[in-house]
Amino acid sequence: MSLTAMHWIDGALYEGHGTREMPILNPASGTSTGQLCLADGADVDAAVASAAAAFPAWRDTSLARRTSVLFAFRELLNERKGQLAEIITREHGKVLSDAMGEVARGQEVVEFACGAPHLLKGSFTANASTRVDAQSIRQPVGPVAIIAPFNFPAMVPMWFFPLALAAGNSVILKPSEKAPSASLWMAELWKEAALPDGVFNVLQGDRVAVDGLLDHPSVRAVSFVGSTPVARYVYERGTAAGKRVQALGGAKNHMVVLPDADIESAADAAVGAGFGSAGQRCMAISVVVTVGDVADEFVGKLKERMARLVIGDGMSDSDMGPVISAESRDRAVSYIGAGVAQGASLEVDGRDVSPKGDADGYWVGPTLFDHVTPEMTIYQDEIFAPVLAVVRVSTYEEAVKIVNDNPYGNGVAIFTKNGGAARRFQTEIEVGMVGVNVPIPVPMAYYSFGGWKASLFGDTHAHGMDGIHFFTRQKTVTTRWLDPSEQHGVDLGFPADTVTGVA
Ligand code: NAD
Image 1 (cartoon, protein in one colour):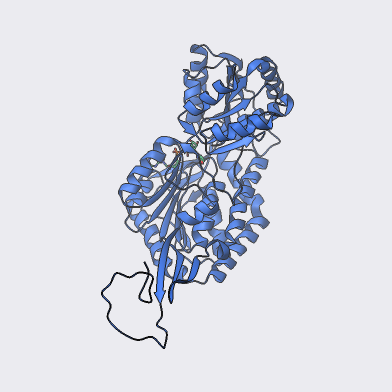
Image 2: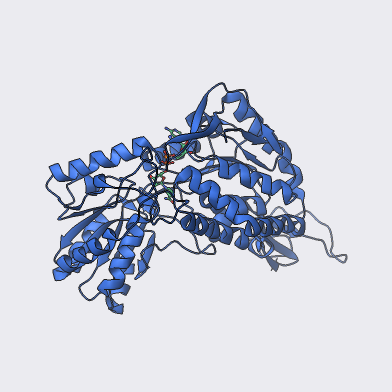
């Protein structure tokens, strides 16, 4: 069935003024499932106008009411999450169980946001000075833009919009043009949950839409997730326009395997984290650093497991689906060639894949390189495909240096039975999210998600209390009510801790 994915503005589908379109592709077959409208400047203006018009009434809506809308959204999402997972699998390619997992992790943030009345509480100090009270309150920032990548069409938007809405902001979501339909499905769910029209908008498009949102004076904050060059660009352009921006970028995540690790569970973890979602997770493990003499045995265990993986259409019974596009497949193939040319040892070649699915899908099989060194491009660049590199080192210190010298700092894991080594690692490692015998340490909704170095531009991470802080502005109010018995009189002295004011 062919469809046209439009924008969602002011509580309804919106055709838009833009004349540019692009096909929506199913990566498992390479076939088009519909056409996507790409926004032009007038569409950006319409989406922002809708969010700006809806903002004051939503900001002034009681917390009790806002929370009940969030709770209704949570109930609908929980009831129908299978539909959303199918949409994700069709457009992204990840297997259905993985798509269900993505929705579940997004739902956790919705559940966290249902606690908004507690999260948004300010503070109050009675009698800070004599008969003077002080309080801090948190207020929404206004219309906010969320710009999402293709690899988590539901979860990444849900890292942001539940808290943005709970705090009283209105939202313009710009999904990836490669996976646009999940956002429209969620927009319809918001309507059903009785969110007022205009509070949640979806703007379909590419960089024209992004630039329009970054430059628009009514957009007050931008949450971006994508590759590092675009994240840096969005951060610089958005902050130059006076906006609050958090821009989460790319990654090169390492898994350090110490000689005392439980080899079987470490190998299971490396294969799951390296090849799940075809290596297209921002927390995917793309480098295994083996320490000491564990390398030969570990590489053997990886190969055994990789030989059993079934590659195919995510709607069938497969372990791993295709990559997102023909361009992405060709890029991965070219990196595999570069790895061979630069002297890495190609242990499993994903170019030889026999998928359980349409031959025209964008297939790359699980690929394993051993004896990789930090000078090689397969080590340096984020490939974002099922290509795993093994780097061999002799000592723990060398392993830490490799991770810390890497420009990215999103996720890292250590596998060991030594609690002292793990504790030292979590202190010394310069990465935002650390797993100890956990390969993909994605924080729970009530903690915050974010990397260090080139993996995040801005000061605040996603969700958790950082999310509340990002989507609110703090105001401090100092109040003095005259006591009925108080005498009037002018005092030109600087207010100090007296009956006249605060120091
Ligand atoms: P991308 O950078 O190509 O696109 C992300 C968003 O930016 C999309 O909405 C896209 O339309 C827009 N965009 C693309 N090029 C642009 C340009 N030149 N100017 C303005 N906007 C532009 O990323 P992607 O390929 O969709 O997603 C994969 C990347 O996202 C990987 O690098 C991955 O590591 C990263 N990612 C990071 C996290 C994280 O939490 N750090 C999470 C998910 C994905």
